[in-house]
Image (cartoon, rainbow, N blue to C red; front, side, top):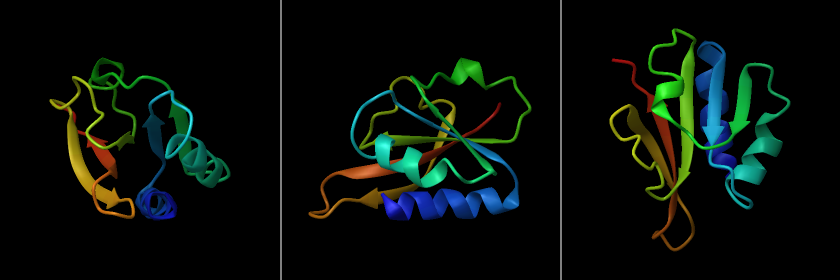
Length: 101
């Protein structure tokens, strides 16, 4: 989870970003919230991601963090940026960026 937080912190160096995660307990959601909550350039939302909330908005960069392939029906608007594999190499946290049409 630390690597995901560092990656998103680096992305925020170019301007404010919004990071959204599924409303679940555990990792990465709980840990990422704790890591990122004090960064003034990162806003964190924990809810169900839906492309329609952002696709027509012109407000900065939006990222979604998933467990494995958990992006639901949002593949049409999310571009995978990076995978961070857990020990054992089977499961991962995915970082996706919103692609506006």
